[in-house]
Length: 80
Image (cartoon, rainbow, N blue to C red; front, side, top):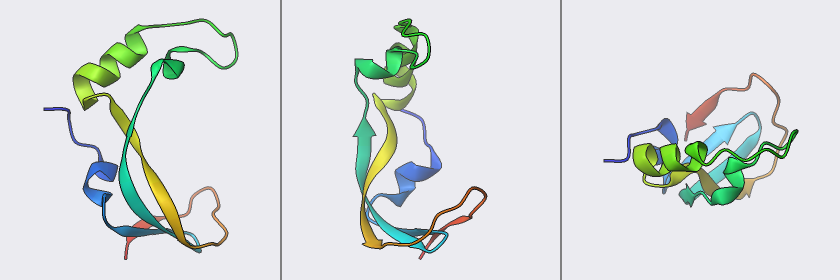
């Protein structure tokens, strides 16, 4: 059924990471670019195929900033 990741349930919610708040607008449908290793430029079609089979081609989310702010490594993510 596409599997569930935490961010799938966040669509329509506002999340806070550090000082920043973001509305999660929709899931991110991935394209073939994720098959390309950014360091070596080698292509691996199994990556997108796996995302298509396991996640209905979606991985990640798009969002809109509600309140700008500092985000740092280790900041917690919460739905507000």
